[in-house]
Image 1 (spheres, rainbow, N blue to C red):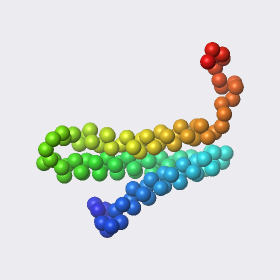
Image 2: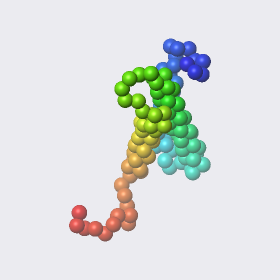
Image 3: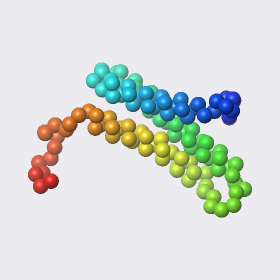
Image 4: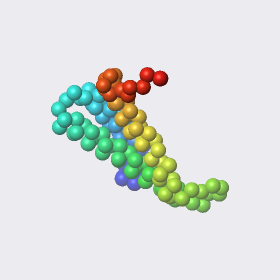
Length: 118
């Protein structure tokens, strides 16, 4: 609404951002053997979309917090609300990174430690 998108279409903003992040994940997996330059480009797009999601979540949470300033009961500060609202996109980014590490394939024997007690 603040960026003058019609009220009925405002739900599309998070869908576009998160959809772009999801497609970025697919591109990262498909291009894992591509030249470094192509992978850096995809990582840049993915990082930018994730940063936009984090920023938009924090901004939205602070705005809602300020609107509900007159509400009774527990009220968190704007900074706390902003930080808490970033957990979901940060968790998504962390999960993506872990998935990419897992999808790269099995660990080489030379990378494993010499612990036989496990």
